Length: 375
Image (tube, rainbow, N blue to C red; front, side, top):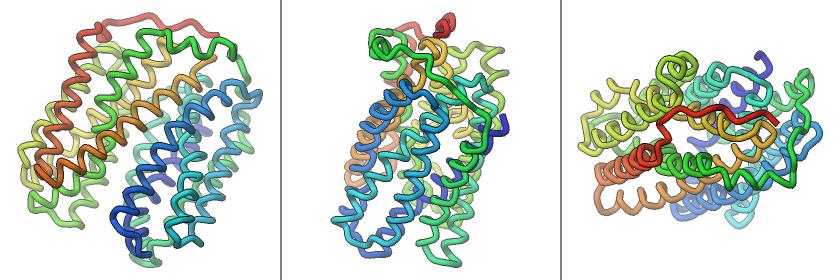
């Protein structure tokens, strides 16, 4: 388990240190709002393709540990190079290359943990904690040394990930039948779960972008917003750690349904534009909803997909539920912000979540199922 704790800790510390501040850095070096938006959105689109492309290769790899090691080294190296780029014409494709290596490295660590028989919630909680502290400490370092420090924090963390994989004794072998890997698209429960996740995950991820508008509109400050994010992201960790007990007590499917319903109610409440102290006070809602759904969706895939195809199945899940859905919600949120304000964004997010809940219930996914046979 120690190996995976290190993997999740430094992978998500890298993301927390880099992703929330990259927009501020690009603004600092003179990029326009449209240029910043295009950099992030195009890179996210690249991540959709990258997850599927590398997920297939991972399934066929004879040494899966070394496969993820090379992706981590590539991400770290590209990020260092980005520090020396201040031209939009060069930064845009270079940032896309970063996402091409980074996105699958993140999703395939999940596959490794499941294939190696780890308690997923117990190790994944370190990712939530590290992301929260990564955001917090990167902001502190940036105040002292400048925003450029995020490139070195990110690269340093991914180099540690690669080093950990180099010295670890994890040795996952190829157990998949490449000729049948696309059979997962004939798996009705898997496809239905991805569709439900599309309506849940995109709004959840996009909340990280638009929550600040809601919080400041409610009378909050920038300093308070940083604390709010630390509390909200940090609250995910204990619920991830408790997921095994929660799933055993209520079943995985019913716990997922409850978390999805709470997420819908949360965004519907946000749509009323509460005051900042109320938003801060109910930070635990993020832990309940995000902590359970992140682990729950992955564990559901583990139940319905043979182990030999987990790498590809999880990569496709990330590409569609986190990638495509996130692009859709980010774009819609931007339009709604201009015309309806923060409240309008969260009405849309609540409607998205409600659609996911209706489909989850309508398709009977809340009923328990047997775990797929190993392969």
